[in-house]
Length: 222
Image 1 (cartoon, one colour):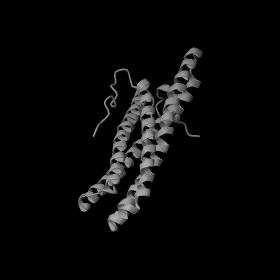
Image 2 (cartoon, one colour):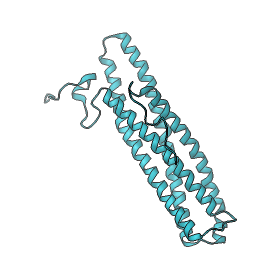
Image 3 (spheres, helix red, strand yellow):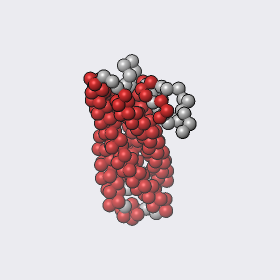
Image 4 (tube, one colour):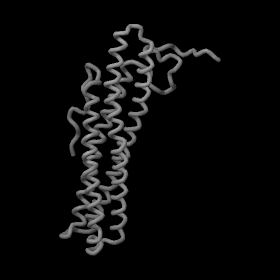
C-alpha cells in the first residue's frame, strides 16, 4: 500500500480526507451554517411563490372572473415559471447543504475515538447528539417538503397547459375540483414550510460561530 503524503490536519482528518470535502475546523462549521442559512432564505422565497401561484390560479378560475383573459393567463404562466425556478433553487441549496453537512458529522463521530480525555469525549458526544439531531431534523423536514413542492409544480403546470388551449367559462367551471386539490396541497405545503423553517432556525440558533451574525435574522419579504 502506498503511504499517504497529504499533510495531517487538525481534528484527525489525515489520510481519510476526501478530496473536495470538508477539511476540518471552524471553517467547515461556518460553511454548513452558511448553507443552512441559504436553505432558509430560499425556502421562505419558495413559500411565497407557491402561495402566490395558487392564489392566482384560484382567482383565475373563480366563478365571477371578469378580467382580461390574455393578460391574466400570461401573469399566471409567469408565476408558474417563477415558482418552478424557485423550488429548483431551493432543491439545489438543500443538496449542497447535505454534501457539506453529512461529512462533517461523520468526521466528528470519528474524532471522538481519538480523544484521550474521557470527560471531553463525553461532552463532545453530548454536543454531537444535540447538533446532529438538529441537523437531521432539517434534513427530514426539507426532504418531504421538496417532494410536495414538485407535486405542486406539476399541478400548476398542468393547469397552465389546460388553459392555454381551453380558456372559457365552461372550461373554468370544469376545473373547480382540480383547483381545490391544489389549494389543499398548498395548505399542506405551507405547514411543511413552517416546520422546515423552524428546524433550520433551531439549528442556526446553536451553531453559528461566536462572532457571526446569522443571515436569517430578518428573512426576506416580497
